[in-house]
Image 1: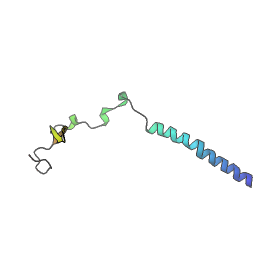
Image 2 (image 1 turned 135 degrees about the vertical axis):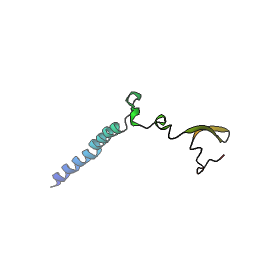
Image 3 (image 1 turned 60 degrees about the horizontal axis):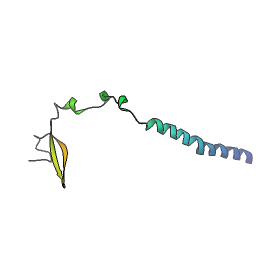
Image 4 (image 1 turned 60 degrees about the vertical axis):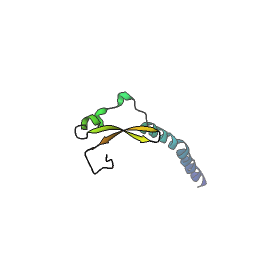
Length: 85
């Protein structure tokens, strides 16, 4: 009976310390792999050029301390927003 328990413990230890890290490494490599620019499919993502007619924008400079940050202002004619001239 003790020999069976030892074998089970060894199998569990090998599974936990050897097989599991290998499986995790392989899965991590597949899920978190880098993609190159050639594999980028722009048709999958919405870009501004496709909606520019519906969402006009104006490039503005926003002061931040001693610097100016570039930003886009959408919906300039909308008086319900946070930005009022």
